Amino acid sequence: MAEGRGKAQADSLRSTQSDTVARKLLPDNTTVEVSSTELHKGETIKVIAGDIIPADGEVIEGVASVDESAITGESAPVLKEPGSDVASSVTGGTRILSDELIIRVTAEPGQTVNIVSLKSRLLIVKREMTKLLNLPGVLVEKIQETEGALILSVKVQKKTGKCPRCGHTSHRLHQNQRHLVRNLPICNREVMLYLNRRRFKCDYCKKPFSESLDFVGYKKNFTHRYAHAVTKQVIHSDVINVAKNNKLTTEDPKNRTISTEFLPTPKLTRLARIGTAGSG
Ligand SMILES: [Zn+2]
Image (tube, rainbow, N blue to C red; front, side):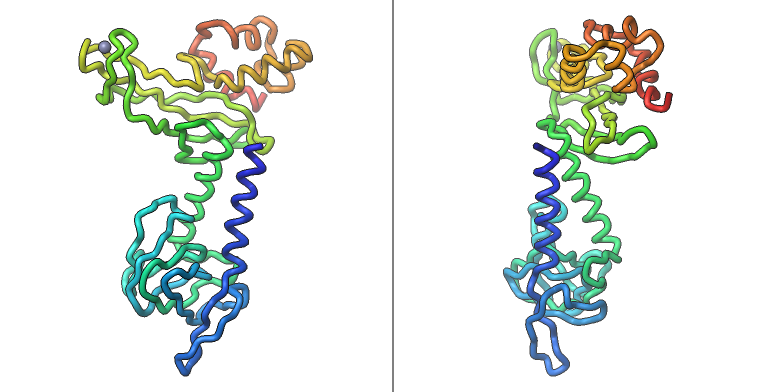
C-alpha cells in the first residue's frame, strides 16, 4: 500500500542519518571515526567527496558542491562555503560531491535547529504526502490541518490544457479557479484537496476553456477514487449508513448526498456544505 511505502522511505531516510560514520576533527588536526549518533553540538567534523554529511552543521572551512536531492528533491548540486547563512548551512543526510569541508555541528543527534534544515524537512513532508496521495502528475504544495480534515493544496504538473472545442493545446493561462475536492482519507484523516482547475485561452479558436483533469470530473467536489469507494460501500451497506460513516450530509442523505454524488452535474453550491459536513 502507498501508506506503507511512504513510511518505509521516511524510516530509511532517518536510518541513513543516524547510522552515518563521521570523521571527528581532533585538536591536532587528525580525525577519528565515530558514529554520527555520538556527535555533539559544537564539535568539528571533516567530510570529503562521496561522504554522507552526518549531521546538520555550518561550514567553517572549504568549498564543495553538495547533493541535497535526498532532502529537497532538487537534483542540481549546491555550492557550500563558509560565511553566508544559506551557503554555509549543511543538512545531515545530504552528500558531498567534490572536495572537502570542515563543518561545525549545529544540532545534537536527532535534533534540528537551523532554518534550512526545517525547510528541508517540510519539503520531505510534502514529498511524502505527494507519494501517499498517489495521484500521478499531482504535487502537494501546502498542508493545512483542521480539526476535521487535512487540506492539501495541490498543483497539477502539466502546463497545458487541451481545448475541448477544437482540440488544440494551449499554454495560455486565462484564470485560476481554486476549489475544494474531497478525496480518500490518508492515515485515517479525512482529506480535502484544494485544487486549481485552470482556465486556458485557446490560441486557435480564441475561447477560454477549463482544463480537464483525469482524477476529478468537471464541477465535481469529490475525486473519482472517492466516488468509487463510496459506491463500493453502498453496495455492501445502505445509503443512510454510508452517509453517516462518511460524515456526508445527514439531512435527507438518500436524496441529497449519495444519490447526487453520481449524477452528471451536482450543484456547485454543495461544495461548501461538503466542506463543513465533518463538523456536524
Ligand atoms: Zn480551441
